[in-house]
Image 1 (cartoon, rainbow, N blue to C red):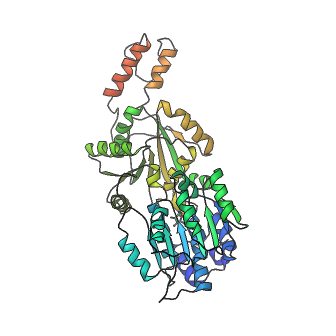
Image 2 (cartoon, helix red, strand yellow):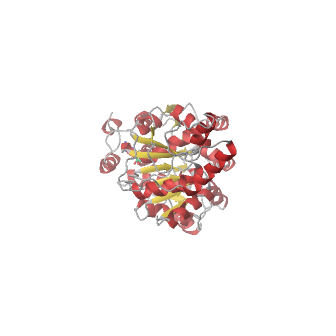
Length: 435
Ligand code: AMP
């Protein structure tokens, strides 16, 4: 199927052509025809599947054809709520891109910044509002926003809203919406509370489930480096200095960890920035823009801060820490396989993280290449092997100048090796793949 076959109006077809999109993604070809007919939708999909266009295109077409925007007296006809500012901004950008040949006005509002510029725009009148729940509710309560003319309502990444404790605000927002409207509800997973919410607001929806992992993940080269926790920073520095990495999004499990990584990288002469929830919205946006514009090569992020971030042509995703939830791994690495361009996902796995890796391997079908020839191989496993073999070294790695006699002795060696080990090779182009 092609976009040509979808009964789209000329201005939208033209915008898609400008973007170079000819073929709808699976969620688009399944959702757009039903949405154009006015049906509700329950979409099980995540970022990377093309879901934004799947709802933006029918909304733009619907407003243009049926409700018409009056330039003097615009009223909010479509409301899209998203859990993070970054995602909200990206959705608004998509509306502007797909609607570039239409005369509709889109506004994005989010917290963490002054509300004045937002209220000024709202007063002028807009057709499409993209918002995060907290700021939206604030502005509804201050009567800067009226939702009584909304015909299209989208709830994006509902499960993340649940994770982030936003559901109460979302329910309050829904109470301000008219009963008659078309609702599109997206969530990558369906915990019971989300299912309940979906059932309460959707009317005989069509259900579209897409599994982005396989399509996206298939074109991504996945590599695993076994490394001790204490050596992860050294390995990261080594890779960033010696491997051909154009741009890297590095995932840290915690905000503190992200700051520490940035500090260590800059000590090693590598310019990096961090984005996480403790940073102001302005600082996050600045770091993101610098990264998108290639001013910084390395962006270190936590999962929540990176949610929904769309970076074209990202060459590497590095999982400094493996995620607790295997689906998060797929979300993370999907950032490099955007719009069917390939990329590389590098993951660091310590001894303690091996069970996490096992669950990830169960979920993804494509095999993950193990890279053994690197500067900081896992010491713990070698020590364990030595202990198990009762002091006889069965490992081929040269870790055992001293033959350990007890676990205590092994632990001493372990600490020493972790403290003092230097890269065995830092020659450019050293062989990294185990093939
Ligand atoms: P989304 O899941 O909406 O965040 O979209 C993921 C990425 O796919 C974005 O960079 C879009 O610009 C891109 N994209 C969306 N639809 C298409 C399409 N039909 N063909 C090619 N790329 C697309």
